[in-house]
Image (cartoon, rainbow, N blue to C red; front, side, top):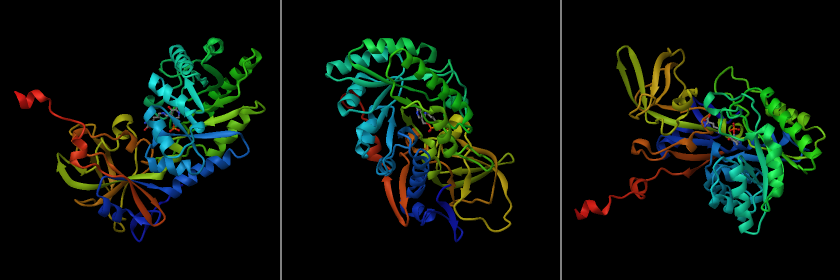
Length: 423
Ligand code: LLP
């Protein structure tokens, strides 16, 4: 469910036409819908109603300050994986005591930042990380609230590159070694071991594999409690998938929440969840313009002004995004199989191969659907292209929430070495 729809033949985001946005802001531009973000957060919040639950939005999905601020204003917490994400979440209004710090490679500086701000929890993934965190906390006269992220050895996730829960992945501690970690934590002066966390992958369409992982977490909590550890939190991670194409039918947030309730039962813990894609995925589209239509060797290449530097998911994961013309095609206009490609000098800069599309010509606009998550956050300046712009729409208002940098801004951090001019 989202708020992108055709009105009078033109696709709109809420009450604003994508043609108007393209005209005013140029292309490529990401456009996010405030109503869709809010709806997704609300659906989830309602599904967890009555349960002691922190919805920590996974900032990596879409870290635009406007998006985080929208969710923060509704009470969302944040799951962050770097000092930068942490500072962005705080800047956007997420209270520090609603921030979970995940990630396998936290630096001392990042740990100190989290401790000084008093964040809710560090999700720890290795013994050296635990020991470093204790050292940093002790040096600050503080104790770090810690959950151990366990690797439950459960396979899931929409693509091999976004699955994280089996032994070969770098993530988490082995779930059968959790006792060793709690024993060690209880001896460390800077650590307050409070919980167990899990995250097995992303774009998971069915709740069953999540159940298997969550049940392992709950069994672990029972075992640890029996050994005298007072575990007060479980973190079930993120991962529930969203529909990208017709026929995709992921399990619903309410099925997800019901399963969490069932698995937790009478455990008496605070629950943390870390949804990213579920909230931001179909709250955003990427608008792009057709630069050229090139016919060659019996193929038609529709060359867009958006490239893999703006939306890398098709190149990186073979991901499928619906691409719709911003203007509805004439009734009965024949569809033709084309390759949708970008301007980048790489063969992987192809969004779709042999995709049946209505007639497209130079200057036409298209919208990549379901591009709100892992779109702009993975964008780059590859080929020295300016970072893609982002806009947020609410009703009939549209605000630029990240403008396109100028050439001077784009190159401001670089310089030629002195020996060039002095030589
Ligand atoms: N928690 C942790 C510890 C994570 O690593 C992730 C995602 C999430 C939560 C949020 O997962 P979600 O609810 O969004 O599925 N770039 C890839 C997805 C990478 C996901 C990385 N971790 C893509 O575009 O499909």
